[in-house]
Amino acid sequence: MSEHTPTLSAGPLASRAREIEPFHVMELLARAQALEASGRDIIHMEVGEPDFPTPAPVVDAAQRFLAQGQVRYTPALGLPALREAISAYYATRFGVAVPASRIIVTAGASGALLLALAALTQPGDAWLVPDPGYPCNRHFVRAFEGIAQALPVHAHDAFQPTLEQVRQAWAAHTRGLMVASPSNPTGTLISPALLEQLAGFVSERNGALIVDEIYQGLSYGVAPSTALAMPHPCFVINSFSKYFGMTGWRLGWLVAPEAYVRDLEKLAQHFFISPSTPAQHAALAAFTPETIAILEQRRDAFARRRDVLCAGLRALGFDVPAEPEGAFYVYADVSQHAKDSAAFAHHLLETAGVAATPGIDFGQQSPERWLRFAYTTDEARIEEALARMKQALG
Image (cartoon, rainbow, N blue to C red; front, top):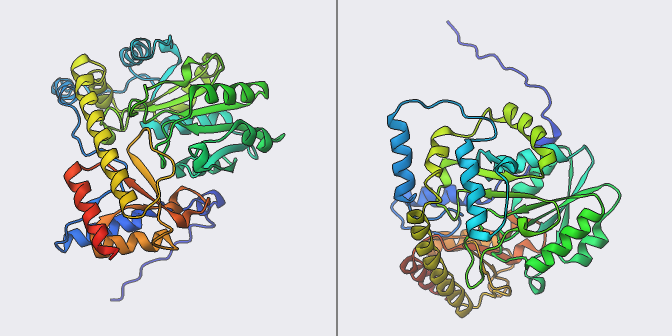
């Protein structure tokens, strides 16, 4: 008796799916994990995930909630108590009044960005996107049939767009501008004065400004700030993943102008039903003084790691032309040692057991020159990574 497996034709793949590029670092991560499985010791500096555990008060809050057994849907906009807690956080931490009615709790910061772009993007609309920048930004724009128009940003401008750049790039079909502060992959900040200029320009042209603040709180030598302090309207994306150390809980939020909230709510109802209920109850403990004290100690640790890594990379001949003031990344120019950062990243992995992310993931602005190192591992491991790289470089 012969077996026959039918072949089903799924039909043509949607062009939007075909045009989405892979996250190239995942190939490198897979190789790193294979090396670990064979017994190699790998120092992971490629993944943007803090090594610290979720703060104990947050875990305790989740366990208390789960013990009750009533894990049900919440409103699509999020738990009212959590929206109020986020509002209070803006008031106490930043001195900014943000009504809870403008706050939408989402399935991670990615969920917030999806909602914002779904609400704002018509087919053919162009979004100005800094290059280098977080890859999901351009791919999410494409998913909603928009055009991600790269703004090449440079080290002498802290890898942030200038007002003149935005003015020259703006066209009739431009819908808006996306910026990040602190940024991924460069860890640089936009000054409040420049951000206000950019926001004013976008507002004058009836455009939209999306500000990624998911690394807010992780700044070093500079007080954290928020775009919500500006008089101009904008959409602000934030997350419980980075500063609050809740990556796997998949929880974030979006602050939107009041006029957009009802339409964003309808989209959220259909996209997600609601954010994770256990994660939301856990996050209620994220703003307590006990938790904030833990997070500030971790921020101090990140600052020390940054200093060790920047000094060590420079000593090895890597150029760090824009001092990272936030997040937990160093964007290093490796052209003195290699002509292809992707090949060089694999060389460091194979010979030194050090994993870093090549620039190809972050855009087309000379990606072959750059590696992103994440200081999401402790100082001893960073020093070990530097020693291994020194040996690998001969």
